[in-house]
Amino acid sequence: MKILEKAWGGFARGVVKTVMRVVYRPDVVFEDKEALLTSDRPLIFISNHTSCLDPLLLLTVLKGFKPYSLAAKDWFEKKSLHCVMEQNRCIPVDRYNLDTSWLRRAKEVIGERGSIIIFPEGHTEKTEETDEFKSGFLMLAIIANARIVPVWHSGYRMFRKTKAVISAPQDFREGTRMVVSDLKNECERFRDCVIALGEEYAPDSCAAAKEEDLNASKAD
Amino acid sequence: MLQKLIEILGNVNPDINTTGITETTRLREDLELDSLNMMLIAVNIEDTYGFRFDDMPDFGTVGELLAYIEKKTGDAR
Image (cartoon, rainbow over all chains, first blue to last red):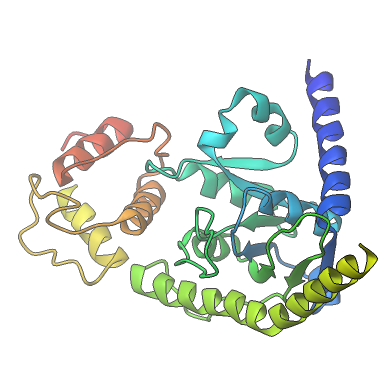
């Protein structure tokens, strides 16, 4: 049974990555890939969250890092998705109850040099605004002594390029304590980092999209 | 155990007014603890008492939280 589940999980992963590459054409920019590859500490990728496709996009573009990802427990409990999520390094998190298990589990699995993807907004944000960040990623960074990697992506249009920008890894501010005020301040700082990536790279991606639209209309 | 819990509350969020906290003090309404506060308190309690909040409990008052710790650690209040 386990072998079947593993095979199904691997198959699903392959299909998803192929579909993502063909349909959403990730255009990835690493600001400092070397620093990510040679990091001697775990990495926490934090990204804006615009769609349920986001984990799939990041798992595709970060495949070399074999990251874990946090997934809402309610998704995890869907029968059709459970096996796929389980086989693809997803850690369930209960968003509505007092759940500390994900924090312990995440610390354990990222160990000394592993990585994990977290969407700190905690839900998809359909507007252009990036919502307030929740502090879970920072708590994990503190207890696991991890570095944080801000990520921004442009959102999705079928058969158009999806820009994904992976920043250089950053440390949380020295002296950040596990207290409410410190966590809120640092969260705001990292949210600003993600927004800044978008502001820096979005114009290019918009121009590229317009150019693609123009080329498509010419071809028609 | 109440004193220890009050100490944890004060450490996690120095803005909490810890004077006059009793077992009937309500966590959300009286102390205005949001999910971040509760998460930090839970992690601190886990580290202090060596157990896990593994059954997704929901607490209304300080007394309910104390009773949970007591149940998990087997200590008498």
